[in-house]
Image (cartoon, rainbow, N blue to C red; front, side, top):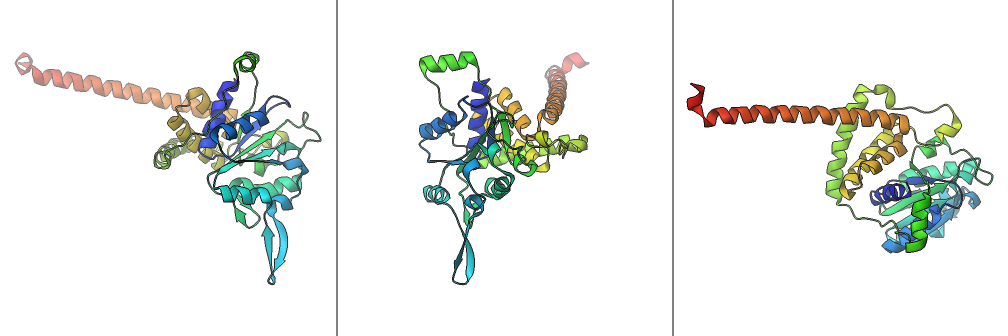
Length: 294
């Protein structure tokens, strides 16, 4: 399972979709992100959300020339200077509500104070479940809905192989932006057709706060799923990774319904294609032997 999650992480980072890794402490989430940045020679800024103040993300108010500017922290300035990199928000489930609120613009709009983080910066976060975190908090629904959620499950056999032969780090792939936009538009249309038939799945905000702190369906997360499906195609990630990414955006129940509908759609198209081929073959056979038709 770890290899599938690693590939899913690579796809999310490649298309710059904010991704949140959930797992028990000590399973290598931080190490995987650190190794990924090092292998790709990308700058990495690790920000421990639990020991930060809201002003560390919203900016520190500074009076200048009769107006108030919001000065960004040094880590944000370094990412802007580099032009690309990985912003790793570690221990995000231990951040108090005020800090989580300040993170909303950072994750979605990439604004830290008056500074905007470049589009080439990937945003990755890591969290432990509330009962496993040190003084943990449920993730606020608005913040949770800005991430693709991946469960970091460790496999004993894969871990043993990594200890013996070394772990293969996730590499940050470069995707053709034109082709990514074209394929995203295709999946936008596919998902739009699905939601038109399953309108109740467009938005499903859970009433349970612990569930609302994970993946759930909204127009935003369906759009994220379309981009991730497109990126998965370009990266050759495979069906297992694509399924995991969709579930990480809209939740497992909505993802399952979409997968069943998409499989039925593909089956229907295959049957239609086979029928058209059969009719064309019969038509060509008839034209090639006109005497037999008499």
